[in-house]
Image (tube, rainbow, N blue to C red; front, side, top):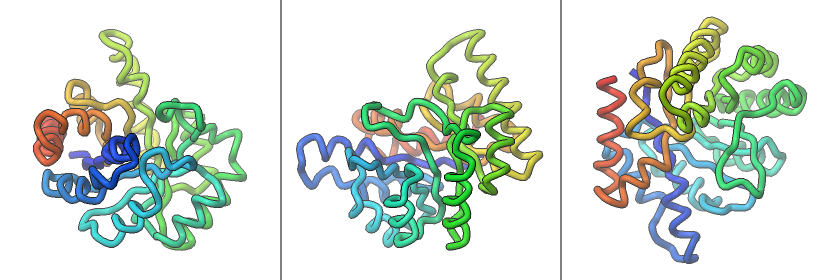
Length: 238
């Protein structure tokens, strides 16, 4: 069964919209733990649009489950990761103008940069994942960086339906099998929700699913602990 990583970024989005001290992202993470989250994921963006440095440091000190820090491959973010020492880092592409992450890393075009970052982080005992498209070329490029994990971008799978969704599911399944064969732990995330998660959770060798927006949206109606528990049950029963 895949593990559930709950991304709490959009709890912080609500807080930052008004510049208040609530809702507290750390409190949200504690409730997510109670609901069954296997890890907590946060994206510390360069513009600090939702999660801020204080959140990351507090989460590291209070969480009873692993902390996955998503971040751009920049000197500033690497410095923060080395100081905070999350349980893992996921390197993601980042553009200031985007609403959310729009696709996987161009690993082939950034081999040297990503390899240096991975080497630095893993030398400090921080396992590293790359957020990539579910494609053979991206997996082969990841091997050159020595990253231990990949997170497959499921955005297109989540946007299409019917036959096209089945094609995307097959593409992700093939990529997951290849990553596993190459010794890279496969994870997935982006756009996953209560209607489409089960098929992804059934993919052999899939280890972690990182889900945020749909859980936070559901939590507005039923509460965060229940929203996490419902998603966890879907994954467990897939």
